[in-house]
Length: 111
Image 1 (cartoon, rainbow, N blue to C red):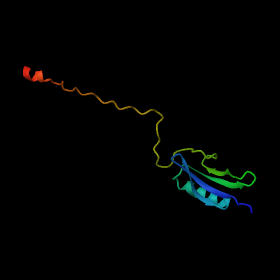
Image 2 (cartoon, rainbow, N blue to C red; image 1 turned 30 degrees about the vertical axis):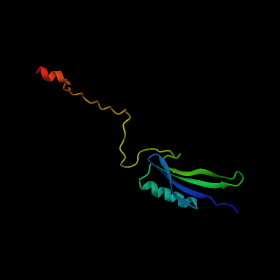
Image 3 (cartoon, rainbow, N blue to C red; image 1 turned 120 degrees about the horizontal axis):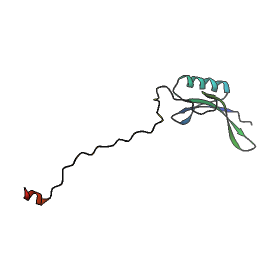
Image 4 (cartoon, rainbow, N blue to C red; image 1 turned 90 degrees about the vertical axis):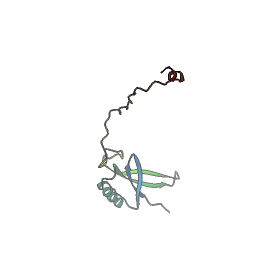
């Protein structure tokens, strides 16, 4: 019996790919990918075809669709994500207040 292809809809958020849905046909998976990308909650979406290779006895994955830039990598920030500057953060330096001088027992007697 031949195993049918399975299409995974994957989303990228915070640098991590997650499987959102598994579909039996490519058209349904691509439509779901468009819906998820249009929701603007994800940096990128892709559809991956997963097929079992009987000869090698392993699963093979092939990206068949991706948004926004065609190769499955993140292309830009999501909505409401602050833009980070490229400069290194400045270190906070505490100003040292003048501490009172420690007094010895003899200082009390000298007063």
